[in-house]
Length: 252
Image (cartoon, rainbow, N blue to C red; front, side):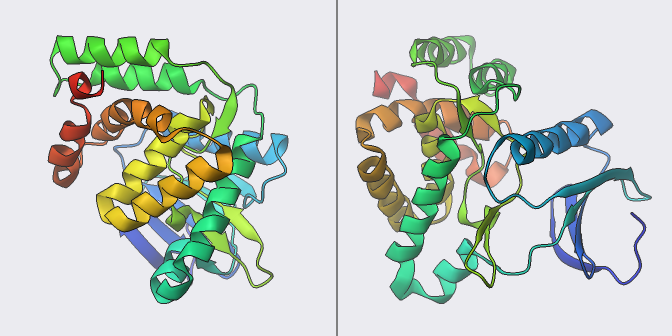
């Protein structure tokens, strides 16, 4: 969409997000193939079609002079990340809202979306930063974990939740969505918090385990696996932290 009067909301490596009066345009650079962008579009369309979650409607997939893009309806509001930062005294309230929303996501079923187990196995096998023994240990652990088919966001963090003026919560960015074990999804969320703020990570884990009646030790068993998945994003500043979690021998 070669729209005029569009403004840059943010830029990340290989992605730029623009806003017009009523649309959000997510543009990918040439690192992303047409297939990558279509896969993200497919995930969003499947979640929108098969769940009762609030997901901004996907309008189109287009090719621009900058690269392929997704065009979505615009949702006005603030992210939960913004609210947590602006009102630290309400952190626990916002974190409860965040966890409750994740549990609502985990209740959904999207039968034709990719299996999380297959996605994680592909990511583990692609990691050349790990030797064959470490990859084998991770793959063996993954194969031993219970097989579920709950909807998992895969990148569930407060920047991906928008609160509109009616206090309705919208979930965005379903690129990593899959069906699988909810505790794997929780482990990834804990890891994402841990990369930024240890205290928030611990509050999140406490609330998730309480509200879902899940043993923390069980969520912890997923941490080396999801750390390996995160390592495939090749963010150099995260590498040392993630490698500590991937030390699977420590978790046996």
